[in-house]
Image (cartoon, rainbow, N blue to C red; front, side, top):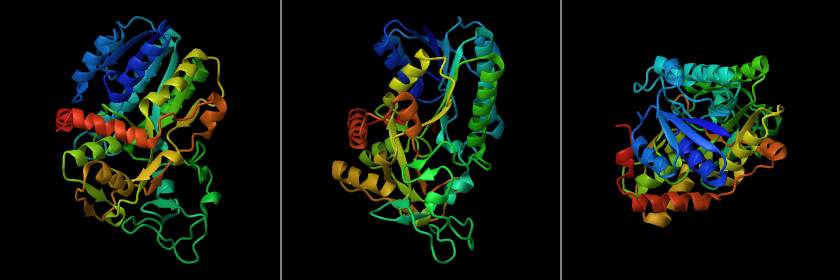
Length: 378
């Protein structure tokens, strides 16, 4: 089997490439990357050491794909992964759409011409920002938790969110696609999502349409927050890695939004835990049911920033964290994905516990004290 991985020099792409190469010796793995992100060159050397062929190209340019030898699968791990992309002044809206949507179109056309499979890594940010912001939460033990009882008065939200004042709030169990396990695949994907989320959701829809129109095997894995040693941590992506590296280096840190409390919660999955699921999907292209799956750490591997800070303080010593009370437009108080469907369909579950992920990142931070400076896009 021949597999083309796009975005192969990124954290997830390189993790999957080296993992597939090591675990499935008969498979040939090649990759495409435009090498524009800081830190890419370090992973380029890693891939070469594993005997993985790297092609320099950009998925936004269809001509860059024309000379690639035919592969049986395209594993699309290339994207601008920031929810702030297109509105933060660093990336234009056109650049975001060209990368995350036009790039997908080019890859789907390549898959059509090759009659190959297409496996896309998507995101939890395809879920409706308004529906996520409206999830009822309450503070318990330094974090937001789902509120399972209906409030008696007006909508109670973490201060600074400013959405929906005066309306009543349903119980969490009454919201479609929401349970104590997290957000499931049938949770609302109605706009607004963010430009980033919309570009990924549009890519999902097109991939499913290509699957039906041209008989292509297609799988879409919606990932929560991915983490692990070697991740290019940034505050708007790779937050667990960014926080641990920054704490060790005594760099400024800040709780943003929700009164500056740090109570906001996300779940965390080690990127290598994707490998068993991806391998099974590549080996079973005829499985058409449930093309779209949540793949994440889930409620057992979730934490607030304040809880992460407590771990960092115990590991590295005390460090002050500033507070910015105002909540940004795309911030949500609680986003944990429910991956039960992936468990039922593919017998998949996370393998790396949250403390082990933290410790792995911490050890990497100690061994590579200049990692943030080398990988941040400054």
